[in-house]
Image (tube, rainbow, N blue to C red; front, side):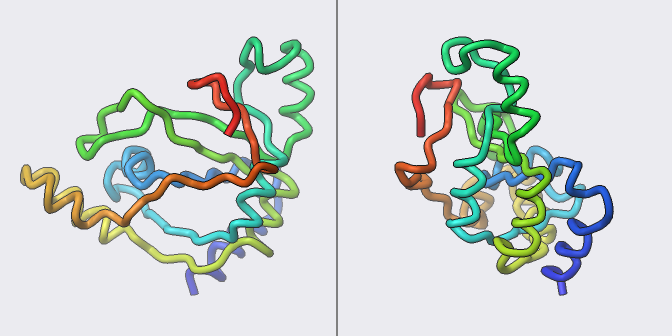
Length: 171
């Protein structure tokens, strides 16, 4: 039922002109939703879909040395169906850490593909977010960490290279 609701929402007229963000980092998502003050959905997408989005993305901000000219970057950004943004990763107290996590914005064709082709299971994880928040608020960070899903580094394929402004390297 949640998968159908997510597809219906994404298919609403005009949604393909909006940005839909994929936030692979659990703690960054908790920062954005205030530990479940907003509804939190875990959406499983295909690896092929995620890599298509990376391959067709543009950095969300101009970076000297990565882009030849600001005007060229602006044209690329307008045409790209996906954009990559790097935001500070968060700890359990939602404080910024010294490294960044990927956020992937989808628009146009990428939103259609996301809704129709890439989306697998959709789960409401709001109760989990609130349970973790309760442990953090109670001062039991070990218990809070134990409730979080395991996260692994993403092994990007050679075709899915994208600019990382925080390190100045691809991938």
